Image (tube, rainbow over all chains, first blue to last red; front, side):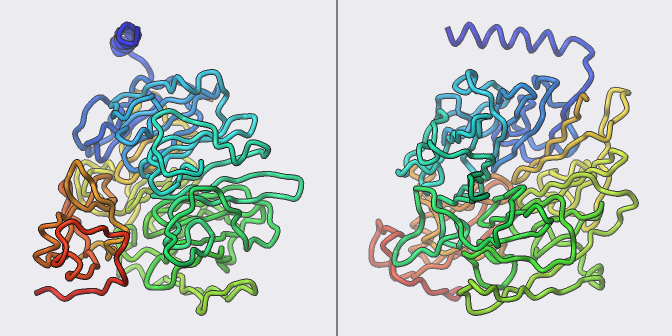
Length: 404
Length: 82
């Protein structure tokens, strides 16, 4: 039955290929686990057309080496590394082309996230489903088992989950209740990333625990990557916790970044964070590939995080903030991979910078870039609209074009 | 330059690779075998790229016990290259 279905799918896919269809998605970068979704396992240094995606993809989440796509009608497709069950296809197997997650077909998914080797899905009814690597408790179901099919996280059975964020070995869930927004953390907590101080030999928690330390703010988005966590409040303020960005202490209590910016978007890498405010992009932290050139650090502004009243850490963390240079246009969206960054400008240009060894910058080579560079997307003659959105996995990049 | 310093407790044992592993930003895994650790090697490499990490561990733990459990290890201490 399954083979027959696959044959039908493949036949349909081939038919699609024969037609001169408008392109809606591209991918490039590391491809060894099929994460580019193009059917190949080679690294690609230039944008490749990502076929077999429905035209109405509303968002994509990219993890360590897999990707999750959400369609406008709430269906989910996954591809890439599946060795830990992170694709949710019911087997511990990789898949080099987008494939629907059958288990979720009867549900309407409204939010997705992809971590190093795990995935999270939130339904329109506020239920959280997880699959993939559970060895650090990052699936939140009370054990450390991996799952090859999405399962409902029962801890949230009576609560309404709004968002999920999957990091390297931890997860966050944003829950809305009568008393406001609460973020829960679960999984590896060695660096404070789940917002809880672990004592004794404890290394992780496999059940969600509420993150304390927000000043009663409404949370609009939350983020996890590497061993970092972040949340953006409705007033445009950024909280960060988890592993230090460079040379400072880890924090399990969310630290309010004292930036005099009204932040509208946040993206986390493994050693840096990007924030967008008023069409400008700023980079926080970063001592490795994500960092901009040494020579451009003249503009660098240092901010010392104040000690929070509730903060028990002994010293405030030092954060460096740098405005991303070489931008003539306003920026409308940002994304961060492990060690590379990407943005889309208001005129629809996709630009990348950072680590480029696997072609993840899409510029045709493997060079690193210290300044955003324009990626040439072949749009089959069609004008690339401003609704393009860029997404970064650890070592790869995906761009989708909205059809609206 | 070493991409990162990682304590052996943060690495995962892979039966398949017969090595301790840690995520590499390229998507692959940094790897180091028990034999390498026994010999005092402290660099774990990624087979897919140029990056490597420095593994922080107590060499005595590996010299004494051929099948150590990294989770039961006491405080690790950085070691100098021999």
